[in-house]
Structures are given as C-alpha cells and as structure tokens.
Amino acid sequence: MTEVAWPAPAKLNLMLRVVGRRTDGYHLLQTVFQFIDLCDELSFRVRDDGEVRRVNDVEGVPAHIDLTVRAANLLRSEAGCAAGADIRVEKRIPLGGGLGGGSSDAATTLVALNQLWGCGLDSPQLMRLGLQLGADVPIFVHGHAAWAEGVGEQFTDIEPITPYYLLLAPAAHVDTGKIFQDPELTRNSPRITIRDFLAGTHGNDCLAVVRRRYPEVAAAFDWLADKAEARLTGTGACLYAACESRAEAEDLWRQRPDGLAGFVVRGVNRSPLLDAC
Image 1 (cartoon, one colour):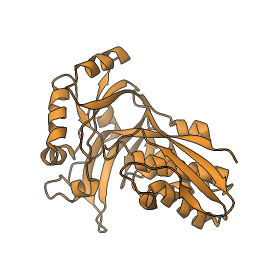
Image 2 (image 1 turned 135 degrees about the vertical axis):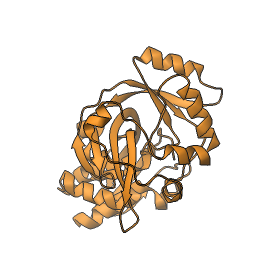
Image 3 (image 1 turned 30 degrees about the vertical axis):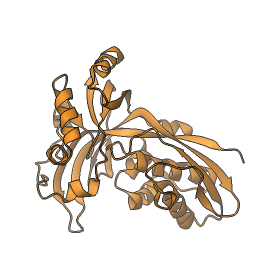
Image 4 (image 1 turned 90 degrees about the vertical axis):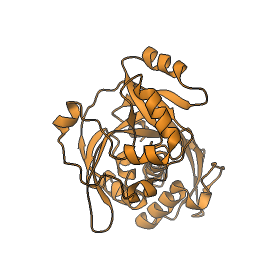
C-alpha cells in the first residue's frame, strides 16, 4: 500500500488560567485553543504483520517514546486490530514550544489509522484514547477551536478571529511537568467566562514561571511586548502576537533580534485534519 500523508497542525492557547487542582495532581484549567497553519506531516503505510514502526529519525524523540508509536499501539489494543503501520513524521513544529506538536502527531495517528485500519471508533472514543496519551491530544482529535475546561478536555466550540500571528520560537525546550510542579505557579485564578475572554482577557498563568526559568523566553517576550500584545502559548517557549495583516506580521518578523527563530502564521478555527478524513 502506498504512503498516505496527513496534517498535524500546531495550536495556540489564546488564554490559559489555572483554576484549581484535582486530588490526582492534575491541574484544572480554563483555556482557549486555536489551530494555526503550521503543521507537521505524517505519512502512514499499512502493514499486514501487526508491527508498528517509525521509519525515520526525529531529532530529540527516540522512536520507542514517540507519541505516534504509542498512539498506534493504543489504538491497535483498543480496537483489537491485527494490522500494523510504518509511520513517517516530518517535523516542522518546534519541540517544547507549547504548540502541541507531539500531541497533534498523536491525534493525527489515531484519526488516520482509525480510518486506514477500518477500526470504526467515533470521535469521542478517539478523544478518550487520546487523553491517555496527553491532556492536549483530545483537542486535536476534536478539530475545532474551543473554550476548554477540566484538564483541557471539556470543549465548547467558539469562533475567535483568525488573524495573522508573528510566532517566535526562542531557543529553549520548556519542560511542561516542571512548570506545573513549580511552587510559584498560580493555581487559584478566579474562573472567567467566554464573554470575558472575548472582551479581552488574554492572560497566561504560566508566564511568570516560564520567564523566571528561561531567560531567553523572557528576553524575546520583552522585545515582542514593546511592539505588540505579546502572549505565551501553553507552558511556552513560543510567543506570539496577533497582527492586522500578513504584511504587518512580516514587518515585525524582519525586525526581530538576530538569531531568534519563528514563523508568520494564520489562525485557523477548523483543523485541516478534519478535511483529510
């Protein structure tokens, strides 16, 4: 069987509040997810011997811990599937940037192989499987911009504006676990409403901890904040600012400090993964 390519888009957190903590240690959140048109590309070739393999190297991600391999094996077990797959992962989304690249790759694996293997699981079933792999996986299966609560898996679809963004990627790999374990992380933010968000509440409770732990993120944030409304996505390290046009975003991009990586991207409320199904 020929390889079939599927998109795995990045996401932004347009707002993130930590509003409590469960007895099992997971944090309770309020956040808003929006996709962007920066995507990894995953290709799948169905095997008839039941073996799941990642067939290319991905810097910084050994195959045995890759979420795509784990997702495929979890789906095989859940669906009682005898088939296997070769998986090729072309990474474009920076690692450790708060853009959800690994989670998106896992979600695309679940959605694609569910179809290619003929497993017949519906979206809620795939979302429940995804939650076993990571809190961000369900939003990528869901595939629509959403207000999210719980640990980030309870969704209300919304339609935020879809501007161009200047997205900066400082040279830092943020450890999400360490951010959420930090004793200085705010864990009792007051809950807000969707209306509050739409009226302009855009904060991220992880920002102060990320700035303190990662000076390169703090420096990039300060530069961007001098030009526009700078925001942190997820637990970082990536930063972004909404722009009125691609030209404005590209102008900011040209002004960036030497050596600071990044992208000009567009917000997307419907994931391209839905159109690939």
